[in-house]
Length: 553
Image (tube, rainbow, N blue to C red; front, side, top):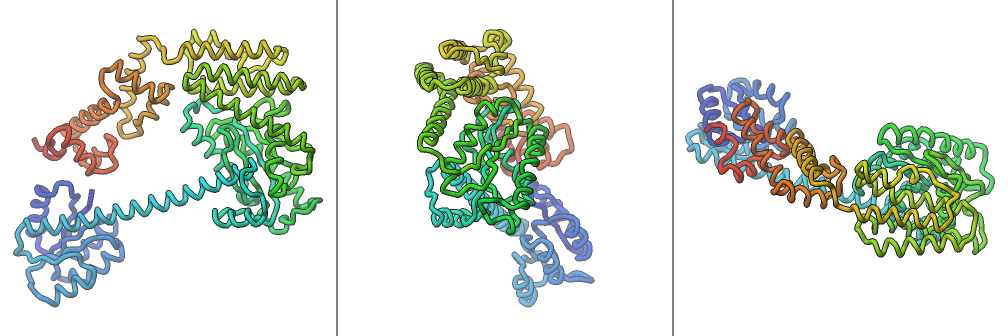
């Protein structure tokens, strides 16, 4: 809603204009003043979008008021209304930044047309500013995404690790790191999602963890980070103190103290993640600097450490036992890459489980178990596979919580407590039967439960119209997949969710218009519309009249 101030030393003119605009332009929020000094008082406490002012007034003329208006509200459209058809006043008004000039003898229609022109220009400016802000936001977001993608590519060996290439990319992506200096590698793993089951919710949580780390370490650390596989986040760290940026083979005492400070801060970061966003996070950090061309090996070692036997449990803090990035045999490097490919495949099981692709799930599960068993290594491998498979199922159950009967059949305690005494065949049999149970129970809630879901959704919509009532939000409320909730709602209620939301907004708006003194723009916000004009269009489409016409009827 735009605000308009009417200024004239003759009350009869001000009151007449207020009455006319109240009828002809009810969407305007009107203010009035009987002198330029009174107008300044209004302008000092309220943003004004349009000023309709007399030019000749006692004490301060309209042309003297104009620069004060522009100083406080540069985008304000000032229209002068005067009985003096004098070129001198016209020239001063327009050259000083006035928007338009009208004679008091003009018809109401001419005055309305001038106001409409001002509103149209304000709308155009607002739209231009919105697009500029969106462009800036997209640009910043794109840079951030490209930075994360580059870190991911560096860690996986998919980007050139030559110093010249790294230097160029770091400069292009405006990263705070220096290509001439080595980095420390930090890896984080989400141990518990705190009920954040949806993909969107998890991405937000991973973003929150990155922010917490950046904020906690910002005084002493320059960093870049990236989500690497939906569960892990990796950081490249360099000290901000130039005296510590030597990258020598034997770190000096100051560098050791810096590393110990970072390591101790991980405890505070874990506490902040737990308290602020409800996540349990484990960390593994390399004990020494890593050359850029050794990043993939350093990442592989930390990944194996964090997901291995030492990393079992929640909120662990680990530091590498050897200097990361040191030369290793080709056999060790091959084993690490093989383990990483295995973990990627385990993550793919979650996709098959969520999309009901049973044959693909069974085939990949057999491949993973057979490959791990053939390695014929210690119980550590079995423990790693068990935890990785359990995480896939726990993720699915977080997103699609089972009812009591199904939960009892699943045996959640076995998912959270690995049994290393199981043979490989017993492990295969357990996870295969668990998958069959979930596949058989997909999208099969009891009929009475469907009605409860619809009632709960309706109750939430009715009491939260001013808030987020998107499909994703509503799905999170009842812990269902958004597309499945949409189908369930329409099947059970007989109408679509969007139809019910529109009905609820219309009924709430009608009630407020008839039985409250709230202004139109206030009612607009109360039923979930940030834009008054959008609300007016919505209401007229549904009721055949504007909100003001409905209130007056």
